[in-house]
Length: 176
Image (cartoon, rainbow, N blue to C red):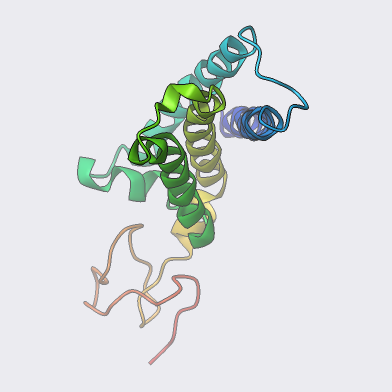
């Protein structure tokens, strides 16, 4: 069963990466006049979101089932390296900025149809990061230790056994 889940996760990661690249390609090639956005292309982008989002939500439940709702994203992305989590939030912020910044100059965001193509990037990027986390979460969870070397739970800040704080990088434990 684990091998099947990993195959699904890698497939969804590949489709998500392709979706991000396709959305960015259409966004940048449209204004350049190389490939203007066609009305028939947007359903493909948004249809692809459903293809990757359904398995993402189902498999994300495996990552978050033992955590509180307030820790949902910490739990879902705990297998990602820190730079990937930051990059995800930067991508989400950039997409919203690209949509709402034209409003500050009293322009309608709908004047540029390319901005509409950016919204699927959020779903594709989240899907990619969650699937990456799913593939790598066991390595991350098993390596979490306190400063005294005891194993600790995935989101714990202190050791349940001795009360010592979690090791700074969570992979290297320091024996005192």
